[in-house]
Image (cartoon, rainbow over all chains, first blue to last red; front, side, top):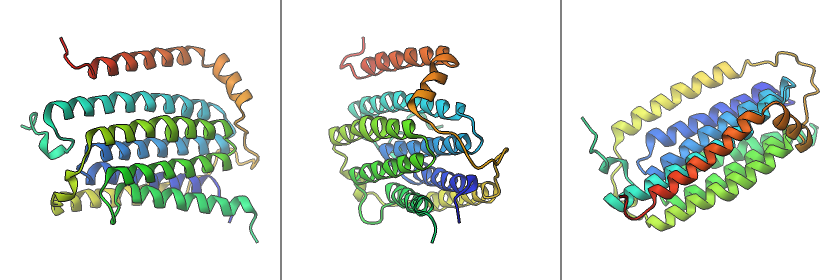
Length: 101
Length: 169
């Protein structure tokens, strides 16, 4: 069967769920970050497939912007993790309970 | 016999999902380096999907920015922090079960909704995402967002330098 819009969107939805599983299920800050990256990539895939099948290139420009913002976000987030590790010697979310009510 | 592109879609989609799964839940290793390597594979097979969607420029950017820059950053931080302790932690079954339940519900909802999606104008031809056409749109229609984006990168760079300074006065 020739893959249509719905095939690509299902792949994107499943990838988003995998990222969500990483964010909710893992306790390592770095792997939570990788889950976030997976979710962003799933959004990119959905945008590109919409752009292809609706014949509108604005979606691909949007993905270009998203990739750039994601790169900036990763840089800042990893710097935060490194600063945290320097202060607390951990990258495990269960050890970071200072703000817990 | 289906054409090669259809076959390649299933190959790349399967690779993307399998490597994504191994990135977040790997039964053989809980080392973050393994996860990062599987994330690289996920991203590369997703670039294959982009090529199948005729988004050639974005496929190149995906490999350059994600598989190149972002993953190097990830690996650098993983090796800098030297995370070895996770293997000793016990797994909390209740929170893991709740998380898995939420994920299954969300995945079921997404698959059910998205599997019925059809394009607005199904002409079947589609557009080509060459560098030239994308550049034209980017520098005519989206010049202001493009410049704002460069400002964002500058802000991120200054922020990262400030965060990683030894003594924050």
